[in-house]
Length: 179
Image (tube, rainbow, N blue to C red):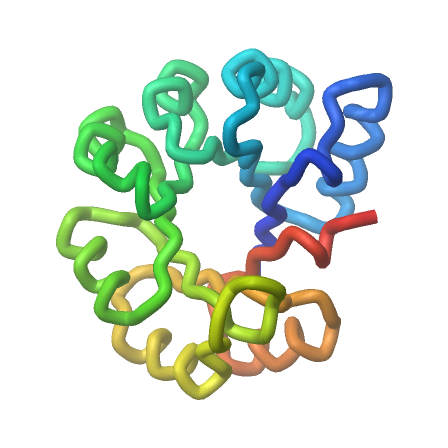
């Protein structure tokens, strides 16, 4: 089961602590999504990350910026707003993940060529609405022909173990990877 860390300005700092932050992520995660909405230095930081991760076992994803992901030979994670770039990203040969909130939404993206989806929120998480729960997640695993990554409220080992028992491809979190 892959562990997919989603960054925030509080968990990934582009100063003298960058290397320590990346080592912390690498000790617990397999994939890393650089997501820093609205940061005017996003592209510069993404380039620095790609260089800094050389030799580390983390697969780097960029948030919505498929053009930069293609240039840097990375993967891309689409939000609902960014999904308009999906077909172009696939033409560029990128591995693509998209944020979804229902099986139906995910199926629509499968038809468009998405490689994997996050499904959220699975557990209660601040400001994200009613959680879908493990039964819904199990149904998604049965109905979706692409890897499903659970997201939302995943902060405890017990929840990770419950998803492991379901046979999920992976889980994603911000708070689980927060120091």
